[in-house]
Amino acid sequence: MKLLFTPARMLAGVLGGIAASAASGQIWKLVSGTKEAPDATDRDHGWGEVIAAAALQGAVFAVVKAAIDRGSAVAYHRATGEWPDK
Image (cartoon, rainbow, N blue to C red; front, side, top):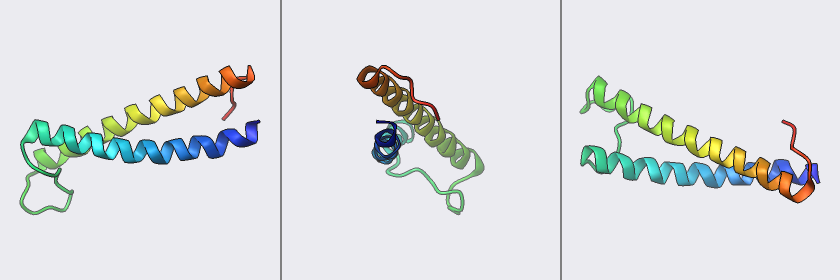
């Protein structure tokens, strides 16, 4: 059963990354009023805006990753009675 945990967790991570990307884009749009968050090399945006966008994206990805990792571990525990080891 532990053999199935790793691929399932990896798939959940990929789907979570897609969801986190969409969520951070929507949050940035609400916060800034612009369509997309600036890239680090975007000439038209200053340091503050670039750093704020990166911090927002990092926070959203960290929260989604933690939720997926915890949810996967709890689901595995409920299904098998064992806590998955890393």
